[in-house]
Every structure is written in structure tokens, then in C-alpha cells.
Image: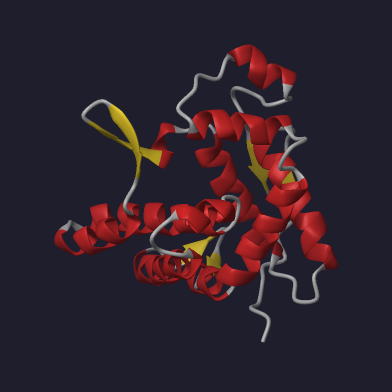
Length: 200
């Protein structure tokens, strides 16, 4: 059964999130089992957030390392309610990103994409008990958990389509390799350094 979606119309200004939203939404329209537009919007926001963000990594002894999501999920139980909410969202969003846009990265890991998928869905379910709505859509994170595999499939297809030809993807790779990204590179690729969006 297809989760219900809000009738809100989402309007994005030209920025990196818009690039992701349009690409994912176009693929979603061709899907036999499309996900709600609100899930596309949320996922494009996740991609935008982590695209050029140090939040994707942990710093340990001056070295950049990937975050251990399973450990973070376990540690959340010892935190305050507000800290739990932040950790659940971070773990869930990063699992969505790893299983979707960076699905190839799991091929060389000890754990596979199924592991990250289970962690992500679990984290979204926990998050729903603390923040049950998004864009005034009730039980949104439960819906996102239900759509997790479908959404990551769309993200993976989108990533493969842009793997070698997108300036945005090249910037992603530089960030993952801890290489500096200049403001000129952002401008050349059409990425605004101060993205804005309007939701109505």
C-alpha cells in the first residue's frame, strides 16, 4: 500500500538541492512504485546537507574517518532525549546516503548495504517517536522507513547516471577524499554557496 502524502507543492530555488530533487523526481515518475514527493524532497535535502559538509565524517587524532553508525545508534540510548533525536536523525540520514548515493562504497566494507538499511530504518522509526511529523505530515519518518529501499534505489540509479559526468559528483568525491573544494569550483558547477529554498 502506497503511504499517503501531503498535497503541499514543493518549490525549490536553483541550488544543489534542486539539482538532486529534479533528478530524483524525474526517476521517481518513471518508477512502477513511486515514493511520495515529500520523501523525494527530504532525501534531496539529505544529499544537499552532506554534499559539502564535514558532518559526513568524524575527526579522530586529526584524521578524517567515516562515522560508525551502528555504534552511534547504541550510544544514543544513554543520551538525553534531545541528543537522541539528533543522533537518530544523523544515523538514519547517513544510512540513507550510504545505501543510496554511495551504494558502491559498501562493496569494500565488512558489512553490506543490508546492514546500513536496517540501521537506517530502525533510526527513522526511533526518530518518529520523538519527531513524528515533517512538513506537517504525520508519521513522516515511519513512512520514510517504509520507503527506505525504494528511495535508496532511486538515489543509486541517479548516482550511476551522474557518476563520471557530473561536476557535482566530482565535488562529492573530493569531499570524501578530504580534498579542499574552492568557491570557484562551486560557482563553475552551479552550486550556490548560500542555498535557499521555499516550501509552500
